[in-house]
Length: 243
Image (cartoon, rainbow, N blue to C red; front, side, top):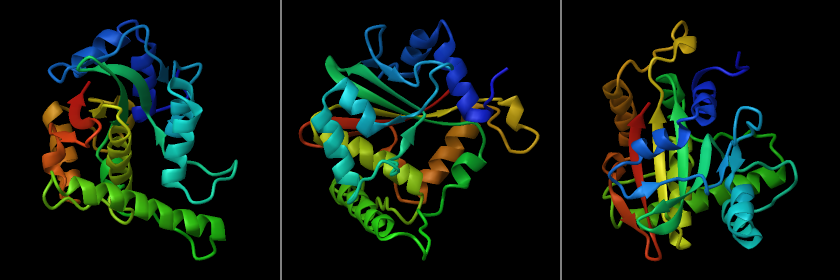
């Protein structure tokens, strides 16, 4: 029996499945992206279940310099205790014939999104380092938003509203701006029975899609879904799928 519940359990079950690669590629159909046995992903399986920070993943999949650059873009001051955003699944992949990255954010019930409508908070008693990083994160997301406004009119991702979605889009933008094509996959797991007694789960793809679209509307980003965003050196696309 898994020690996890909800989207974490569902994600690890998917990764452990013998059909993992086939099922991911079905989710990626029609956008020119795919993964194969030669790709690298984190978490690797339920025995190696630690989620990935992009600074760590990029240091392994690309080079240490790129890992340091994304960390420095996001944080003003780094210590061994400082964490950057974790991802439910990160994998190398092929996108339209080029080496790319698949970023996956998974949800199993409505509160996982609705509970994230607020911004990133910080305590008045936070350390000086934390306050400096809080400022830097705002600058990083605002940089992405300023550039995305050229394509998505009215977009307003920020540190202070729908923080998780905002940071996901900002990281996809940053990677594409470094010349790495990206698929940002928001994955809704349907009929998560271990969540049903406490939360409203997704009974159909429409349940999940409606929930996700309504969430993106809060920061003017509904039109980002299924839109290829050209970032100069490369591009990214945000897609909504269910499993």
